[in-house]
Amino acid sequence: MKHGKKYTEAAKLVDRATQYEPSEAIALVKKTASAKFDETVEVHIRTGCDGRHAEQQIRGAVVLPNGTGKTVRVLVFAKGDKVNEAEAAGADHVGGEELIPKIQNDGWLDFDVVVATPDMMGVVGRLGKVLGPKGLMPNPKAGTVTMDVTKAVNDIKAGKIEYRLDKTNIIHVPVGKASFSEEKLQENYDALMEAIVKAKPSALKGQYLKSITLATTMGPGVKISTAKY
Image 1 (cartoon, rainbow, N blue to C red):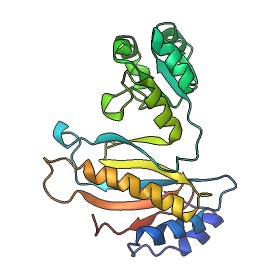
Image 2 (image 1 turned 90 degrees about the vertical axis):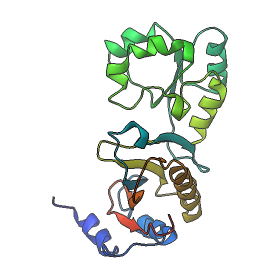
Image 3 (image 1 turned 45 degrees about the vertical axis):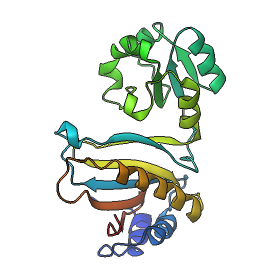
């Protein structure tokens, strides 16, 4: 894969053989962000889990103290009083049954997170084929199937992110933007890692966190030491 000049210059700042401390990695990643837009800073965690076994699955959510720097659009499936509650909390879209054809047939996907009250999951379930592959299906573990729609919407707007294993047992999550200060990125990183460490499956034998890499959207990866975990 051929990389551009900016990437090549940025990559020179990173020693690929070194596992950096989180604070050093964050400083480096900020230095290597050279795109014309405000790049997202992402953490990629390779785990020793085997996601094919249900008891080794990892899925949850954490509120980053400083948010992700991204405006998140929330869709809430609700009925009755919960509709007003969701609107009051600042949900971008609220509805029920009538949204099914709009999403299924018209391909409407102007939202980043879907929240549903438990009594609406029968309706939402019909959208499994559309929402599932995009990782948008509401899930109790992620706090997106709940009667407390106010808290769900507030948390998401405040910077709540979901983490889960992908098919290769890696967790990919954003922890902010390159324009964030090092302190803010560090606080977000620490909050994420605390949640990931707590989420370690009890059934797992052997090493849990195999490698941690920090990178911006367009920049090179910086390896972080896993020693303290």
